[in-house]
Image (spheres, rainbow, N blue to C red):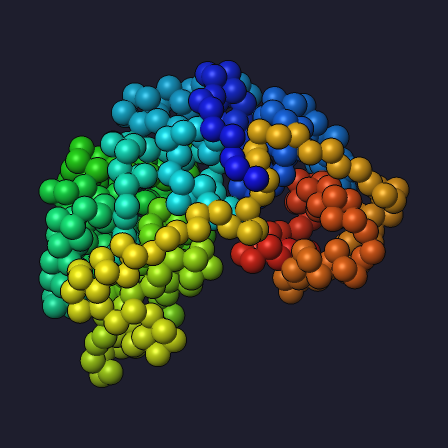
Length: 373
């Protein structure tokens, strides 16, 4: 089902922001709430009762409209915008992933987000050769008409952004748009905002911590048609970005390196697993230019602007108890849960919505859930 595209009114944008900032409401739950109630305003009204049905024991609080207005005003004061998933300017590649951010906060040229793009990621402690290669290939990709996306980290990310400054680059960051991390990239982040775009889904003032970076990585891969890894250790964040790219149906490229260098073991392992060996921009351009992207993910929630009726086939308490009993700390696929609990998909999804809102279950990639013990 195609996503309905229309601009939000000012009042609707405030409601969307209030819902986004409500505790336990992540991207997946946000989509389910809009699908179920039709508008953010109606979802906000229903939240306290849903949390109570899910077993929430604390008073359920929702950010007020004045707080949301203040955040949007502060965003506007630094030259930023909030683009909603249903709006025409929202990048199509990002909208196609399983858990796109309902609101994307942007400073700079929004059109860069919808241009053909390639991500370049790699080690923070990159070698001088790795940084030089990343800068050169970013410049070549820019000249070939591609926007370069990266994460503004030290090392390969910074080199890629620097190489693509002249043609346009996008930085997906883990903190708020008004926070520079690392601090030495203050000038680089400012220049990217002038000639390209800086994007985030975090509130202003958020200082990035370890838990923010996996979400940032999915933005990098989600905005791109392919991901190039230049240098990466075996257990690096760059490999997480590469894995997310594969899950999102994007191409993964890797630069071969010395087997004696720990910074190249991750990239060499990607090559063993089928990544495209990359020695120049032509290797990427040839692959991506011939690719016909299927932007829509099969796990993507249905049209965000269409209301879907959901009903319980059993008493709510019984449904909650049945699902809680079947879950544990190890993530379980929702499809498997539906098969084993003998409830309809609608009933399971409705029950999971209430349990998640009450803070009793956690979502994981791959449409899996686990019990919060």
